[in-house]
Length: 167
Image (cartoon, rainbow, N blue to C red; front, side):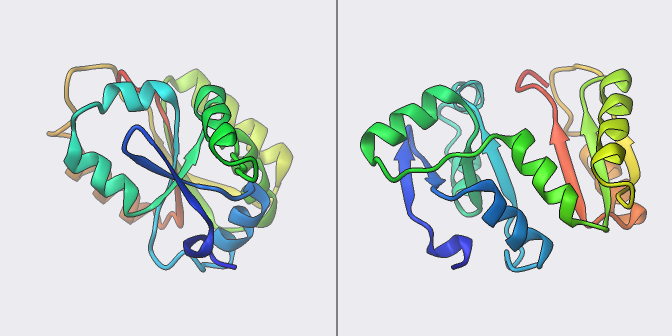
């Protein structure tokens, strides 16, 4: 069953998929997501995006996974069959399967280096082909095009974004 076939439950305008991270990891490693991106959404992200309907619509067009206990608990109460997934669990499962190059966007240089070392322990065949650790500022609008070019030029098949909502 593809991710498009999984049940979606609504929380505060966001439509979360109910699936386990191993199934999602398998689909992504087999390239069966048909160009959709996967977003792990925490409660802090929802608060930060409140009222921004264009971003909510864009996220809902892709695959949203509840990555916080409050959201997962609420959705589980709405439907006892709901399954959430933690972003870190999904990342570990995916990286066990993948031999593709990946790109990281992270919070600090120390965090990014630590994550690369942990990933190499999980799968020695994985390859970090680049990373960015942006400094905090009000907007990144002037940086996005340069980052997109850097990611495209790296040959990465997967981009992992692990930065706090405030960035």
